[in-house]
Image (cartoon, rainbow, N blue to C red; front, side, top):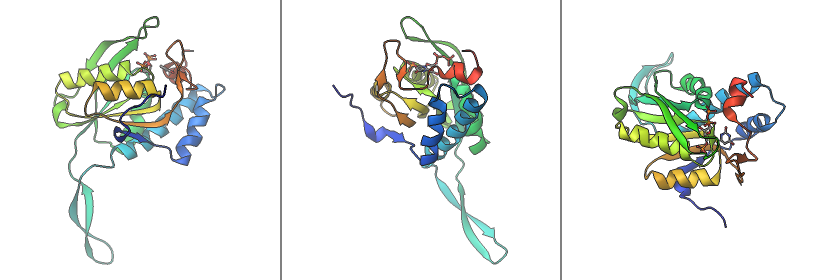
Length: 215
Ligand code: PRP
Ligand code: URA
């Protein structure tokens, strides 16, 4: 039976350049250096979409021709929160786009037998409740890690949370959207399903191992 979820809280970032780069990432022969570069680039593309609702304010500016009124971002504070370890691969791409963002870290690891995540580290900016939190992780499989990360942030006061992943499974989208009433998810692809080891099919294998060369 088809898996259904609230599509109004999911943004599919499927620009042709994104799809082209994803295919290179999926290729089992792509090496660590290129894989890492593409994770960073795709994070930048997703950051672009995830910041689309940032408020603007008018600002006077003088061009070489005449004075005019331009726009600038109206002081939105951002925290980028990678889920360790694979999420680290997306941080630099997000920072390229939002250099003033603070970076929090949350350590989640899936148990290889039960596939349940457990938190082993959490360090966030002190003023997390005032920031738009962009949780980043390349893979959303069962959704357990992302949902635990969201709950960890909420329990520490975070209110405005977005989740940016590169590849998601329908099962993970459903679990996260049903487990948190407000989060919005950005994803570059929605794959078919999960296999018996809770890996995304077709997916790209283990993102952390491919980013850090620990295969
Ligand atoms: C991977 C991935 C996600 C999680 C997704 O991390 O980066 O965090 O699995 O799976 P889930 O949606 O079923 O929770 P992993 O636990 O392998 O740790 P790593 O980043 O250290 O490789
Ligand atoms: N974690 C990964 O890195 N890949 C998957 O397909 C599922 C979980």
